[in-house]
Length: 225
Length: 251
Image (cartoon, rainbow over all chains, first blue to last red; front, side, top):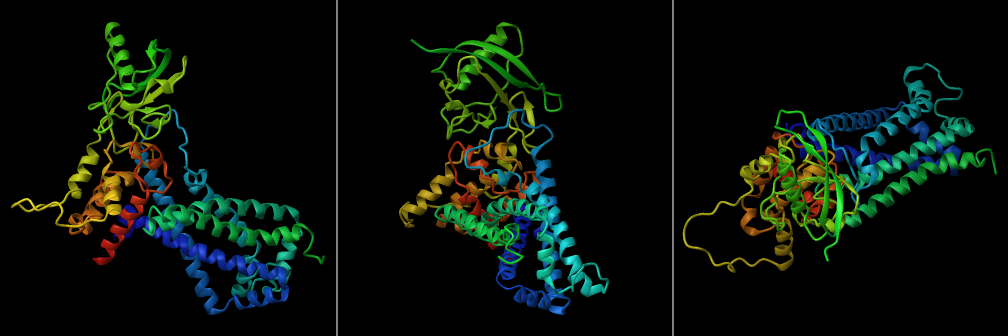
C-alpha cells in the first residue's frame, strides 16, 4: 500500500489529515466566539452537538483524523531519526530561513496533544460523555456549555494554561498549513511565499479566535461588564 | 602582501567504515586567506605527512564547483559558512585568525563513511539509475529547435539541472531526506517535452529507490535549499510531490 510504504504517500496522509484538522479548528474557533456574543446561542450549539447520531459520527471521524495524524507523525519521526544515522553532528548551526517550528513539529504536536487531553477532561468528559453514558461528572447540565466555559475560565490559571496551549498550536500551524500544501504538490516558485503568508494568516486568525474566549474571561468580562 | 591566519582544526578521523571515529585536533599556521579550503586541507596533509602521520582523506575532484565531489560539514554547515558555493570554492578569508574550525563528514544513514571525511554517495547514483534519464531511440539526430520550449520553462529546467548531486541537501536535512536531489532530477526532465513521456514511471521509480535506500521523509524545513551550493528551490519538491501523486492516482 503506497500510502504507508512510500515517503510521499505518508506525507500525503499527514497533509490530508492535517488539513482536515485545520478545517475543524476553523469551525471550533468560530463556534467558540458565540459564547462571547450569546451564551444562549452557544448552548444551542452544545445541544445540537450532543449525543446525537450525526454529532457522534462527526466526532469519531474527527478522532480518527487525530489518531491517524499522530500515528503517522510518530512513524515518520522514527524513520527520520533512523535515516539521520547513529552519529550526530558535533556542531549544528541553524540555516537562514529555516523556522524553529519546522524543526520541532513533533515536540509542538506533543504539547498540543497534552493540552488536548486536559481540554477533553475539562469539557468533553463533562458534556458529550455524560450524555452518552448517563454518568454525571460535571456541576451543570451536560449541554450547558456556557456555564462550563465560565466556570473553567473563572480560574485565571486555566486562562493562562489555555493561552500557552494556543501559542504552541500557532507555531504548529504556521509550519503545518503551508507544509501540507507543499506535500500535496500545490506549490511553485510564485506561490511558495504566498502560501507561507496564507498559512500565517489562517493560523493567526484561528488562534486569535480561540484566544478571545480565555482573554475575555481573564479580563473579567464573563461576569458582566 | 598576503594576509595569513593561524587556525585550530578539529577533524573527524575514522580509519574505515566499521572503525570507531573521533575528533583529532591540529594546529595549522600561516594559512593564506586567499587560499581555498581544500588548499588549506592540502597544506595540513603535507604537514601530517612530514610528521609521518596518516593524511586526512577527503573527496575532491574539479575544484571549481561543478563536479559535486567535495563534501565536508564545516562549522555546522555543509560546504561551510558561505552560501551558494561548494567546499572547493570556500575561501579562507571567511575565517578569522585563531578560530577553531570543526570539520565533519556528511552524516546520514544512506551515506556511510568510507574513511575520515569521505562518504559513499553511491546511493544518489542508484536513484539516478532507477529513472533519472530519458530513453532515446537510435537514428538521425533530431533538430534541436524542432520542439519549441518557452524561455521560462527552459530556465526552470536549467535551474533544476544545476544540481551537482553533492549530497549537501541530505547532509543538512534533520531527517536525512534526499527529496531536494530527487526533486531536482525529476524536475529537470518533467518540465521538458522529451522528459514528460516517461514522467510517471520516473517519479515512481526514483521515489521508490530513494525510500529503499533509507533516506528520510521530507518535513519541509527548507534546510536543504538554504545549504544547496546551487540554490535549487524547494518548489521543485512540490513538483516532485505533484508528479508522484498524479502518477499514483492514475494507476
